[in-house]
Image 1 (cartoon, rainbow, N blue to C red):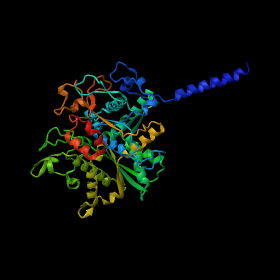
Image 2: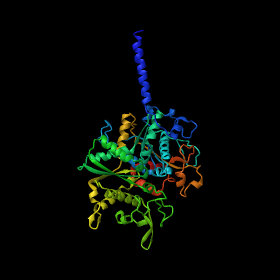
Image 3: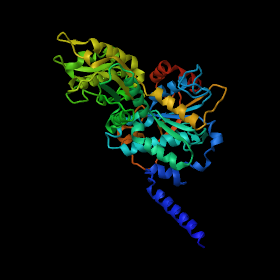
Image 4: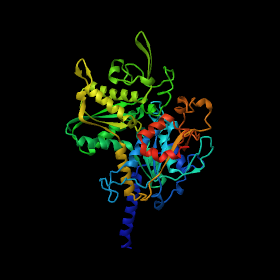
Length: 498
């Protein structure tokens, strides 16, 4: 008996310690759509994760990438073309072989629900979190709609083995919800967001700079991303992690209408117009922080050709002034960022600008040209912005570091496909469901603003469905832009467009 007592004491102590650990373990917070996906078989959002392939099968599944629109194709393009690692040992050493050679991909553009950046300003941040989880659920699922008129998703697709959130706004608001979903799903699937990748790229750039005592980092992103404060918080967190002791000034610029203009949303850009319209929702002339400043029109250097600016004048004074090209949105927000820096007391040299929205790299050439103009811009004979721009300034596209992190994660989990054939891409896009009443649709078939931002969290209503990319659901001008700016991706999807 005496021999048994010590073992009993040890066993009880171990049990007590185990119980304490369980109590200390944080409880994962879930949102309604997550609860439905995990535990309500009767829900339209139920995921049935018990049928998810085991690890041996998972390596052959595609990589899932999603964004609020087609802008995320810039991230996919970088991933598809990336050669940052040695394919044998995994070192950061290019070997002439694409890092993702042989990998298949699924891309989802949640076009029907964009712009994501507006949900927070409309008081709908919780609905944005739900959209991010629904995007993940689609990539984790095995069905899609063949056409918007279908009542049910019957077409079969593969599930995805890892998820890349290419959208900065979805990363800022929904990444933790997706992580919680995956943790509770038991699938072993991981998720990667673009914000940390972009910030780490900025610090690599800073640490390689000749000047390191006092620098500014600009962030151009959607209203929702900036309002989330995700970039500033992440910059300060990484600054501490990487023991950087210099002063860093973060200059946030809200890109009102920029992403929407790239995707040719009619309320922001309408190439068919020749005069201003009442439905315009882009920036206007005024004195507010997000307004177009009339005394800076010569600095913006907007293009007026081909109705890129729609305006009216009375007695030589603008009474209407509407941006009508993505390039003019790019110029407005770049100049506004530099103006913020010029008006600030610190005025640290701008070392880099993080393009915190996947749509913005589409206009990178325009922004580079505008920045070169600002370097030599003079007012009253004096250079106005030259001293604010570091000699080794660079634009940072977070996609590069996202690609590296994705590859590292798959290698560590032994989930690389290791196929000899070239990988394939399936591209999907969300469109309004057939069940949405016509009164809630715009003339172009998209959801009205009021309906889009008026929907309730946790609803069983299916207001948008996901279908394959086609010529019917991609704007011709958008297709031309995709073909020009992401040619490698275009080659992989063009033959599937019907």
